[in-house]
Length: 397
Image 1 (cartoon, rainbow, N blue to C red):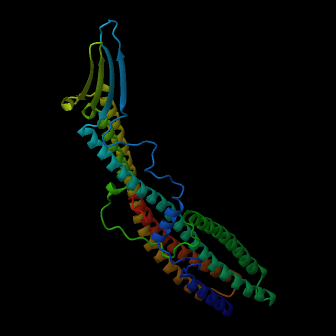
Image 2: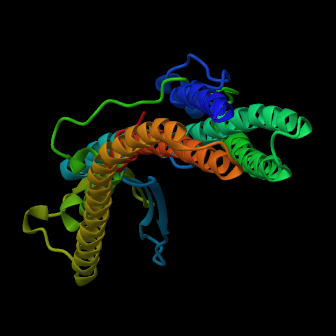
Image 3: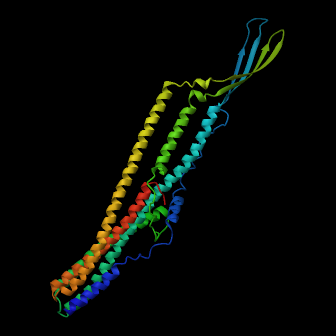
């Protein structure tokens, strides 16, 4: 019986240390903001400047100026020959200039919103890497606790076996459990390194931040600020402005500067003139193709917007349901871990001094570590769920 009590004391001491999930020592003191800033800087060098285009825009000219030259020769002896030179300037109308200004402002807003969308995209990758690494790292820590327990038990069981106080069965049992725990730890360590490398590829930072928890959401979900939705709205506004800029209401004015020379045997005359062609855009007459383009663009926009809103809402509701499930499960898991610890204490006092008693106590101890691990992992998944919810709402790091 004394052997069982000594064995139980060892198991309880190791299990008590397993209740705390300390960090692995490879975490940094950088913040999440530092991580996403590093990711943005690392992945922005290859992006061309958005403002650089192969086209130039004029504030006043609607198109390239044109020059016209004509010569009319008379077949009469006393006839008059005419030479005419004209410069035609297509000038933007007031409506055209208004739409130009609107398009420039929209281009700036789209560029800023695209930067937010890119930051959100990188935030999603960083969040995935950080939380996946933390979860698998924690699993590995509990596996290390198991291995530490089993290694100490193996040494003591080896001594008992050599002293002929225990059979080879108990020794083989512990060796088998130890081997399986080492296999599991190897898998967790490989997966943790994989996620750490992914984080390093994203940010250039070798060690993930120690604190990856994000602020809780207090307000009602607001999808209007989601970068994808904002880009869709801005794109539709831009398309509207482009269609309107090409309509009859934006037709340019044409200013023609003309010089004419009249050459006659009796006289020479030079004439100079100015002509202005102003479209009567008050009627705002459009072609059927323009109407069709507008209608098609409008249908496409509203369909895309409805689909995007539905996707965002479904993702948010799915995460909300998962959060409620994890919260209920956390309370049950913590209660289960508490009961498991009490059962371990009771098991030690009830068991006798035999091989079966040692196996039952060992199984009970390993199960207790698993219960504590489940509660710790579920708590991390709750934090991961919050991070993914903020991601779904369009909130970057």
